[in-house]
Amino acid sequence: MENKVITNLRKYAYKLYKAEWINRISTERQLDVIRNYIEEGISDGFDVNENFEEYLNERGFDGELYCCYDEFIEGEYRDEDYMRTLFDNEDIFNYYKRNDPEFGGGENE
Image 1 (cartoon, helix red, strand yellow):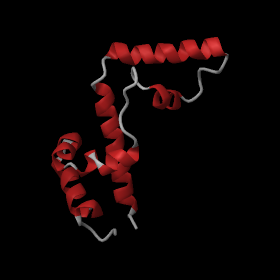
Image 2 (cartoon, rainbow, N blue to C red; image 1 turned 120 degrees about the horizontal axis):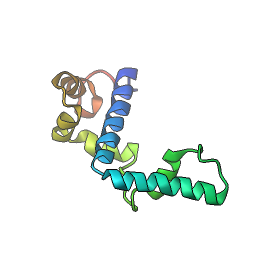
Image 3 (cartoon, rainbow, N blue to C red; image 1 turned 45 degrees about the horizontal axis):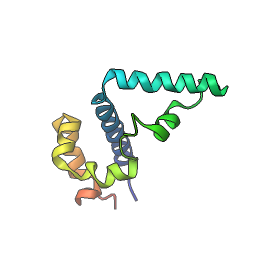
Image 4 (cartoon, helix red, strand yellow; image 1 turned 30 degrees about the vertical axis):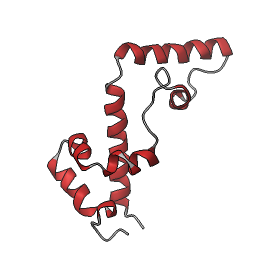
């Protein structure tokens, strides 16, 4: 069973990954998605305060979107070079490497 620190580390790593992925999308494409969300909300009569993340997960950016959490854990999270770059902090990276059971570390199995 995972400990809470490793669970949270994985969740925060996924948030970093999503932010990094979205950062690669042009501002104009991001704004277009938000405008489309609002336009569809107005024309369909739903409240534009409904969940934007759900809308984004269904449509993405012109059909492109970051991978889901489980795919991230199975892929990018296991790529040490990528994670070193994503964390951009040696202390965090070393904690991840030493303590996550994905790498045989810790007693969290």
